[in-house]
Length: 193
Image (tube, rainbow, N blue to C red; front, top):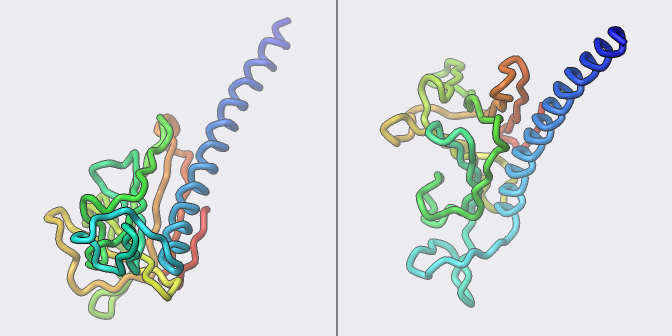
């Protein structure tokens, strides 16, 4: 009986770890799919029900058709991210541009997001736990290429940086060793790892 109890305990422990890993993998794929959804909206046409005064794009039949859509990550709310329409065409998320707010499962969060690029010819990586407080990944018609806007704690774009990729880290809060990431390159490649 003791052997059966030990075997059962090991199996239950491993099953819980497997379930956590599966949820984390699914979450990474969901974030990657949301970024892909912004890319599809950015390269095609999606109307949003926005008042004409707030629409910087083409307005017809009560719908605003803007040329750019994106995904927004904020250091202050690591349990969610936002799919948005760039209504004022400034290349970043602004309050009121939400299409959908995605909330992560309880026990999981975005631990950090980083951008990699060059500043004055030197390679540089800036992350949410050091330099940047928010990140917008934007897709603008007709290109499937991604544009990145990283803001500092004051809400200003970081001057002089040109980014080639962004990386979003996801983690199980109960198991810091268990993590996944989503990478987006400026050529529009989106991958969950």
